[in-house]
Image 1 (cartoon, rainbow, N blue to C red):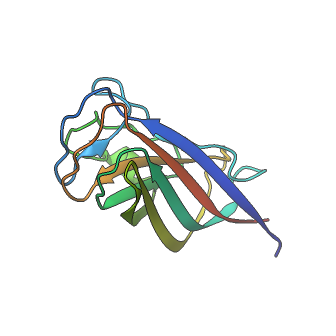
Image 2 (spheres, rainbow, N blue to C red):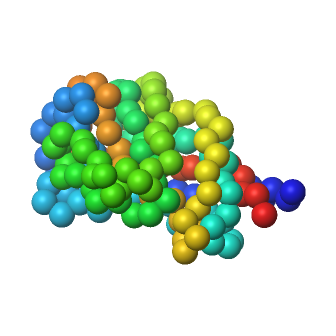
Image 3 (cartoon, rainbow, N blue to C red):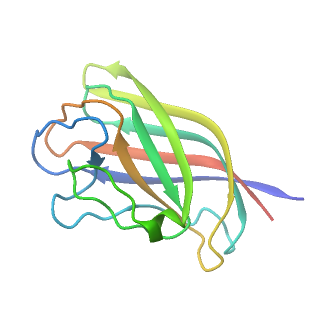
Length: 158
C-alpha cells in the first residue's frame, strides 16, 4: 500500500473585537455568518484514507489557551464566533473526531499550538478536502482580528 505525504493549511481571521471567550466557545470568522475551516486538496483523489499526524496553529495573539480542532469529512455548519460551540446531528454524522491542542508563547506577540496524533479516516467519496471547527477549552482573551494559521500534515493511502 502506497502512502504519500501532505500538508494543508488554512487561516482563520476572527472578528475585529476583543470580546473574551469562555470554555466551549466557538472561534470562527464571524458573529453572524461564520464559515467552517477548509483544508483543501488533502488527497489527489476523492475518498482516500487519510492519516493526520500533526496539527500546528500559529496564533497572532500572545494569549495561550487549550483548544480543540474538530474535523469533518463534509463541510459542517459553523457556530457564530464567541457563542457556545455546538454540532448538529447531521454534521456529527460526518465528524471524524477532534484533536486536543495545547500552546506556548513563542514570542511576546505570538503563540504556537501543536498536537501530535495519528487520526485515520476515509475522506468523503465526493471530496478531497477536510473541514474543521475550532473550539476553546478554557478562557481566552483575544486581540482584534486575531489570526490562526492552521496546518494539518500526514499521509494519504492509495
